[in-house]
Length: 400
Image 1 (spheres, rainbow, N blue to C red):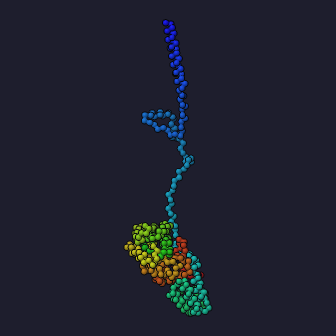
Image 2 (cartoon, one colour):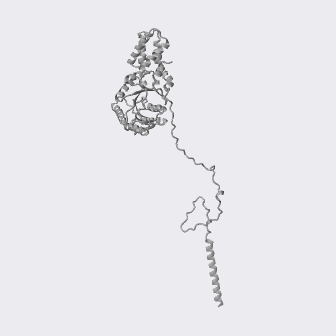
Image 3 (cartoon, rainbow, N blue to C red):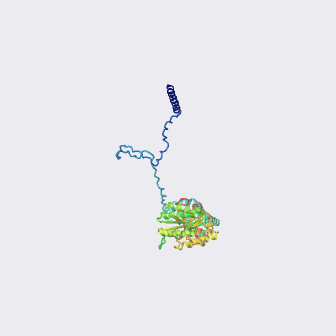
């Protein structure tokens, strides 16, 4: 009996020992838990999920508004506020009064050859037929024209014969009188822009390509603004892309509104709209710049006549100014004849008169068209367009 009990006790002890070994081995094989990861400061905070409890707010003392430091504007980048673009500065053109007198030196620099040549010939001791022929040649080279030259020489020969003695002062006075008579002092050279019965005055500017027609229109706007007039410009030269831009630039410089149409559009439509807007705005003058036409293109010249007819549905034209390049001489007369047949020219603008010694074209073109030279261009400056004054012009021809 004791032997059985002892055997049972030994078996229990053995089983308990084996169980301890198994449990111990399992505990030794279990890996330690990983250390907690450091928080990632770059990662965004986790989004809350449904059911998550909101964090209990921490109790912190609140600061009154008086203790909060407000920014004084000195720290941190300042906000730059862009200002709207400034409006184009309006220029104040030079007054027209006495403008030709101011430009007289420039004019005489190119024209003095004519006057000095005539005075030199007239001062010879013996005025024979050969000398008078030289005088005629001098006048013809200056583009005075055949008929006016003959009239001048005949009158000079008669007066010199009667005068007898010829001092330099007498000869100069004699030549001045005859040239003034030839240029004409009793002609109205006013650019008509103020009709008595309506407003605005309407002026159309015509001429072939290359004469400075668009530039002349812009300069004429400056002349009118300098005299206190308000102006609308009509860019009816739709066949030359730069013409409308150029005219608008001239207008912006003096505050004149420019009416323009699509490129290659109908010039007559632009001219019509310009007069219409000029009426609505109540301006004093509407200036219409037309396309430069070669006088050989009959169809285009007919179109110029159409512009004139369409404009006159509003009101009659007050001025049709023909722009001629003084350096072209007698060729300019051919152009002038064709334009005169299409539209009724009322005045002439001679450009580049300071760049030629052929000042006699003033006489020739007036005789050819029967209309006066009203404006002359004496340079490329914005204010180098001046009203034509016969006395100042003749004085520039013969010098002081």
